[in-house]
Length: 478
Image 1: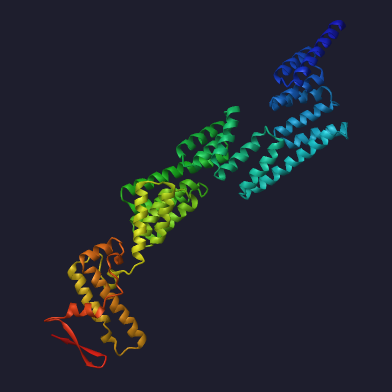
Image 2 (image 1 turned 90 degrees about the horizontal axis):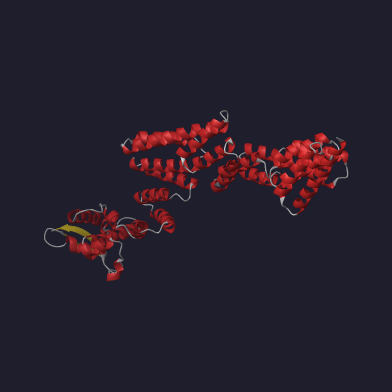
């Protein structure tokens, strides 16, 4: 019996040596196989378990490695490297408190062990990062949480908990591809991980893919029925989807008041869902524009682009409201933003129209000067001129102060200008189309308003004015 045990021991040592050789060559799979053979031969040898634990750690199989490391110190509590590997596995898996205990035991056995000293510091650093992250998550300082988790993961690369917290914060920061990548990596290793399923759903939810998001939340709740975050997110997602759809239905049916109320209720469900809320603001802005509440519509669209500065539809809606309220500079700015993003013929034309209206708005508004609509008939233009010309004629204000006389003279001249342009079909067409009147020699500074007045009122049955003294005139009916 003794010879048999001795023979098994020698064979186990041979397997261990071969395992060491493969380990040195970084062929960890073969090393694992030979250490396993050694353990099978001598299952009570602590160093064999320690070696296999080291190999499993190199293969990234930390949970299995932890089992071997723990078995090694159960067999030999004085095995320093066993305690170090146990601590390293705990730390890699994110259990820093357990890691501290293992490293402390290693230091009790060898208080000068440099590796144990450094690893003990690393474990305490991870504990500190966890505490800071927990506080900052409550404060919604998600950037800082990501920073802390990145630092912690340098020491705990296999910790799913840290990765999930990082992914959740990335989602809250709108960094959805990064968050999805982290969650997907975990799901490839563990398809039943409820936290990873929740984060995948959260990303879809914040990207306004609400129906798909609900599927992930439901799946997470199947894996963990008490998952509070998944439960809240699922409820919010279903409520948002229902309210938004009801609002859209009311809008299509022309019930704008109800649509406004439904979109407003939807906006109160989850302030964190930026993309969906941007669409809801834009939808409500469209409702307000239909209700001719243009200032409210502009405010809603502004809120939409604050949430999502790439939201073309909101810029277009706001630009149209700016056009309707004659805020042409703002309209041009929005259309320029749209055209820079999407260089379509339609957007180019919208920008040109806004630029033209802006140009026209900076000229004198002859329709406004005469007090007529832009669709006024020839007779209406003549009547308006008659009224305004008499109202502002200098003779009517000869007894006023010099300041008033100067102002009325200016208005009289502008009325003459307006009539000259709007009573001439060719000039009116050029004016309405925004073309420069000076291009055809129509320099409005060269004409005499009194001549226009005389031409309009002179002749039988009209007006004439004669001097009653130096510089004085009186109206005389013919």
